[in-house]
Image 1: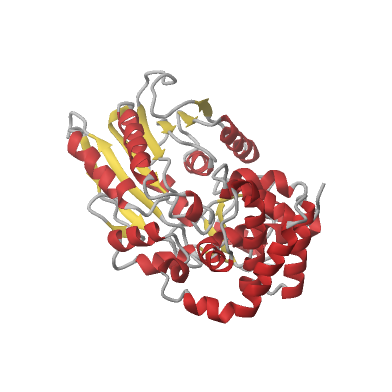
Image 2: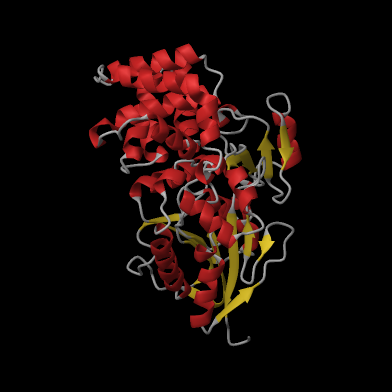
Length: 435
């Protein structure tokens, strides 16, 4: 069993490059095989390589004589990892190259060592000229796939460059303080000797840390004093306008951050149903509920179906719809590689299907909060506009807030360097007899 960190990183990335997985699905099992002392490097190599994949792939196309065969995509992964080290880290070039060559042997492809060595050494010799030759290539310049750049230019002509820049940054670690246990100023005092931290601007429960660390080592973790949650995601609970004795649905609940926030915000709810399609992801919900000592009725089911529904109407529904996740690229950089432009059409069809289904479960006078971590209007404002045009009893409730960009329907947040993720919210209310 290999302990070569570059070989382990290649084992993580190879399925991605073959469109068979994601960092979230591939990384955890490989990390367990990595010595503790090398885990930070493993994460850096995997996430850094995918963050810069558009640029690195442009370079590979200039350096290789022929494309890698499908069965040798693991060697392409080694080259990408090597190029990432040479271009974006302080790892000495000789170490980056020699360890990459050694990784080929660990993958039982010793023959590929010469290929990897030749490509990386050529890049080392010709780096300046190669980078200059790519200076007019937008995918290289902005480090995003061409389709995404074009779409952002079209959707957000005044904001696209800001979005791309934020996507290329590393997201800060943000906590949500559990108001049932402690107040934000008090918890900031507990953090002061450990890590630099500051209040978030828009969420009154948010704390942004100045550096990443193992959150399980922070005071109060086991007792549920806080959860890890981006500031943009923390806005959902307050927008739902929760009241005691309400019956609430979280329609796409994993990993459970917003669900737990709902339960913390209003402990006197009548009940909360949490629907999640994937049993694997539902495990995360159960872990969060247990740590925070919270209760919800967890249902493994399809939110676009009614087979699981009791027939009792809900007072509040949170629909955090499945989406392209283009607002959280900095946390999931493999989205740049895995997502394709045509995906948005199919995703929006699913979103509308779930929205229409959930709407039928909402009480007259009840409120539904539609949310995505996408920055594309096709999944957000335009979808809500389509829904409103065909739904007679839907009332759009404008969100008046100091955050995000006001749209015809809802508000759009863009990812911010050292700030919140990209997100979208729209608040809808079902017409009652009194309206």
